Length: 410
Image (cartoon, rainbow, N blue to C red; front, side, top):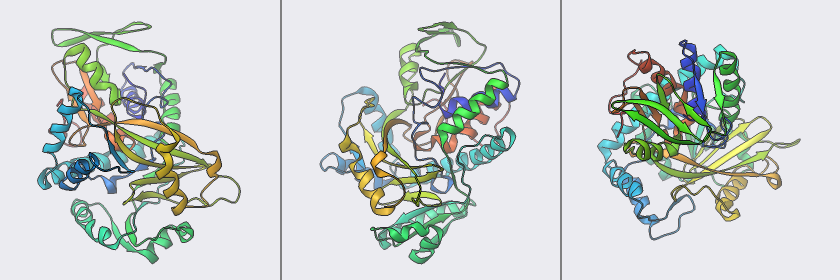
């Protein structure tokens, strides 16, 4: 259930293991969810938990001051209130460290599985394996980020703190920037690529392997008997299987609560992106990265350039207005004024399925044949291949290659 990058990579791993697989989704694969327009970063070097004392301060301030990057509309929605209380409990130094290391463990493993998948299938998705650069304009902010750098370096992540001169060597296109760059953190083993193209191409590989994809399917409920799921009821009839995988992203908690009374600690956090055509004479950056102060992700994708930002708590509202993109456009033009044709920008918004911890929900709950693979947050593209392999191993009764302790239903 779910045809985004998480659902399709899971289908692929299950087909590899010899299962018969059917994928259900309302949209064509990678169209309806966050897989379509995300920043495109495979960012193991930036697998840091959102929940921290700093985040607590930002979240509180957003209630009283307008922030172009972090927006929150206070709601009385019980799902939001339950999620928010659990998130607040994660905003300590000790929990931030535990959650960051868990996110990093999955991200590194997933990057390995992505490499294997690309080699085995030959899918082409504007992949760039030359690293990512995390930029700072403020020297004090750069120095403050050293704690995160040290944490990930201790577990083997290769990271280099660089000054302005070295940053310009890595991304020469920053020389035209109207924004001052103090330096950054270079993660040479990080990657980027277009997750929509990847998902679409991997779907075709799955079809050749015998997989079935049903679009235009709205899942109405899951029918259970005792500790087993018996069928999926949809607007296009009933689907039955031996095993079921829930990978509906931000919509997973709605189906689980409505059908099974299972409360998943997942809440949608809205993100926005622009996709800029790259035409003759344009010079987008040669590699992707993130502008830390503005939380602006960017990545070159062949004939287009993607820029993404904003974290907005507004429930399941998918709409957007021109004003929603003012910060992204302004910052992108300052950083990369000649990256593409800014007069032909495609605008997009989508929902990230966030858990309070920042790690996904994996494994089974009270129903032995329902497997959860959801709640990947802002690192869905980064974690997707790894959690797909983990899910396939769990379905096969195998012990996953990495620990997923405390990542069950919560």
